Length: 128
Image (cartoon, rainbow, N blue to C red):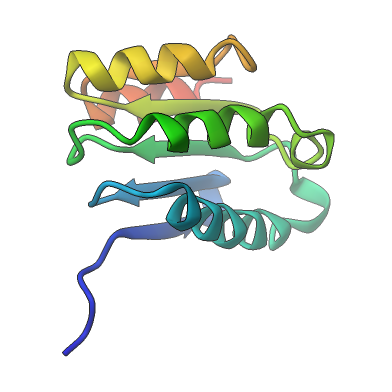
């Protein structure tokens, strides 16, 4: 029997859009593995790294452990990770706790967009 699907990363190359869909609460260790997968996906853009945009759709998750948010803060603040930063990043969250957690992440990167609807987030990401 296969383990339950916790996440999925989709590369929409024509729109230079990476989509990270999270389906389960991720521990710090799980989050680290997802981060490695995401960085590998980003590297496939080659010379276009930094021109891409990223959508984190966590609408199916109520919240993540505080330790996971702490790890993400540290990760986003890491200079090696900053070299792979997207031009724009949006989070789709559907609850107050999730929005508060993304607002904590904005301490490191204040330009993160927070949206209740996926279509609005993608429209914002793809604006010039």
